Length: 437
Image (cartoon, rainbow, N blue to C red; front, side, top):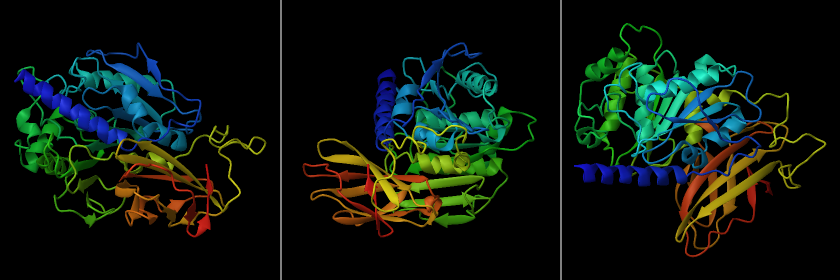
């Protein structure tokens, strides 16, 4: 059994690490840096705390708890995901908790972890939040959580234990609150992982309500993502999460809204049809545990993209007129494109940032470019990309259609190649040529 647990944990680590790596952005374009904080308060399970504060936080910044996968670390999740880069854009603060136990998995199984104030990882994470709130003017209505795999499980746990703290969560490949519970000291629950733990919506909801008896306040909104071919935390866990959080909110399990934000994705919303529905669920057809982590979509659902950094000081990515800097607009068109490639032997991922350098907002955008010979797109996030090769068009999805003057949108894609991951040489945005940086 011990060898099986180790093998499963290793699989989670490998797959989750790959999922995060698939959407890597360049390091944040600022002088801000990830900083370890010690002595932050009660910490019964000896977590480490890493904090990212952008150079120009919003006047009342949101606070995101970003929770890593098994065998990961806070610094690995920081460098391998987009959440810090998006914090530079929107001015929120990020906490990256980091496990020190040998498995480097978060405790989502013990009775202590599933009890409010029970003496395990959630207590330490709550102390990290209190530490930040004591030092920054955090917006109490924008304290949110996200995570991948083990971190997604912890996202469910945090929202269950602390509904008075968190306003929303976004879980990538997780399981419901309480599903992983064990009573024998084991970190792993094979029945839950294999999708064999099923309950009625009422039973799932009761698990959450009993975690904080007597609480009658607001409940956090929940967004959950899952691949239909998840081989580590099986797909039935997706439906069980929907049952749990719709019941917690007193909602029907029948969607109020269904759409396809991009090919292979089915999105359902419960209790509302808009971007801030109480429960939102995205099913990824044919995708394994190695699912793409769409940080921009998560940040949008969590409500962190409605603020901007303080205007008191132009950040390094927004140089003042006397200092144009390397990211100032080039001579072409009213747009600027940054294109970053992370390649390997037969494939690559590309992160593409499109900046509106004009004076009016863009409402609906299509970026056109030609992929070098031998390159073929296999999947994309934050845009619809077609065809898969040659002259392609990347078109906005529903939540990022507007690009204000001076603002940017970022999308990415994964592709195969036959020997070269060379970059396109020219881009046009809605027909206008763009500068390339």
